[in-house]
Image (cartoon, rainbow, N blue to C red; front, side, top):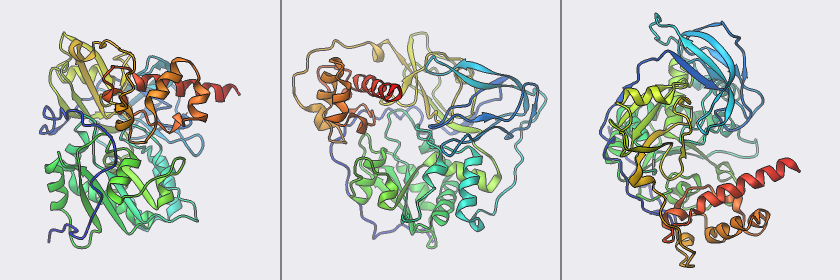
Length: 448
């Protein structure tokens, strides 16, 4: 018997936000393909929020696919695993996607290996919560919506708090990206299995999967596999950016405000991305740690848009080559979505755990528009879903009054969604000014 919770109600949406074009038509109907294995992989030790992992291998070591190559260093840290069978070629400094050099493990793949993964399922539903948290940390699973926050930290709930609801983010509100959509369409049973694993471990009463209404196939596929004994709701959401942000999703579905400085768990909610939920099911049901992920390749500068299963550590250049490369008029390649993604400084940098998309743009999309003075129209205030004052941030950042930005106007509450920049008729790069200010504030704090 199919089931949809008819008594489920939720708020239409959060206040403010913007409506950029979806641009999902190029990949939303493309099935996931697997990228062929390549000759070498670069595994940065710090591809998650927190402390970089520590190598447990040395140069020359032979590796099995899925073998741990670096262990966590502290609580807010997670393990790293080999995406292929091969050997450790080098441990040293390699170019990161932003152009900086970071410590990484280079792996040379074995050209004669089948690269089949062999793992064992875990009796996860009989694990106690501490064993579950430890297993998630050892699995290397992080938030796969882009933030790459170690998942086990989210599941470590203080004793005085109780999780009543699991909220799964299937909004995928960034333009162009469709990797979460394809997971919901092609692996709905795995999505639901991951939801049930997490629900039972955290003791939640129910799970809600929020999906924007521009993904009707995702909604239909998930509903198709719901049964009476699965306490899961599918919540169709208004299409608005940034619907997928934690605070916005909580407001849209539960009509609850998450106060500044608080976490979803303070409201009894645990929030996870669709990709993270699938990774949990794959780990506990098949023993596969986080060694690969789905990546959307799209944009006007991409020869052949695609949704691809890519081993972590694969050089971006190799992934692009598999998809036919870049058009000659391409001027910029970014990692992530167009609203929050960042330019890629080196195409030989690797795919990371948090890489949701690789987008290519031509001169038409990347040419810097003429910037005009602020006309105090307040469109950026109307766009900001966090009710901040982006125009004031831009003025203070230009004056280098960074400390005032935080002490008086709480700039660190900004999640850099870019809605303000998108809405600005004067073409002021507001979010870039905000990022500069936040970096400066972090440096001031470190120096102090």
